[in-house]
Image (cartoon, rainbow, N blue to C red; front, side, top):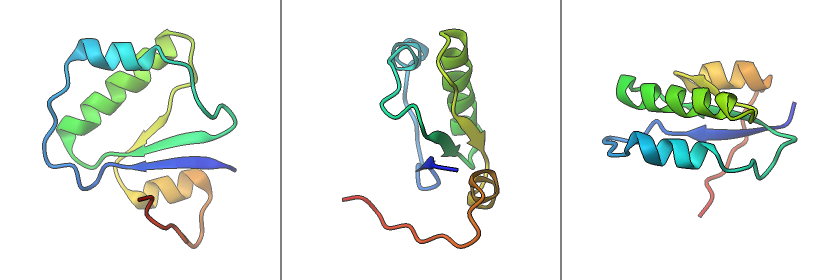
Amino acid sequence: MRGLLLDYSSVEAVAVSQSLIAQRARLPLISREYERVMVVPTPQLYELARAYADQQRGFGIKEPHVVGSMLDAYKLLQIEQANFRPIS
């Protein structure tokens, strides 16, 4: 499975309006062939990520998977041994 892993584990604070989430959720996907997985371990950010995913589904766009840990993301993407490098 090919996937895009979006790790928000280091995020400490979030200040985003619901209207901005809705606006962003309407945009078309850049890479339709990839499964998107958002790792969001904090409750506040998890709620925002779920709202984004729900809105994408409502707009007819394939929603990302939202999980609470990297282990959950690895399982979902069928990754046995990670070999990731940060993007600068």
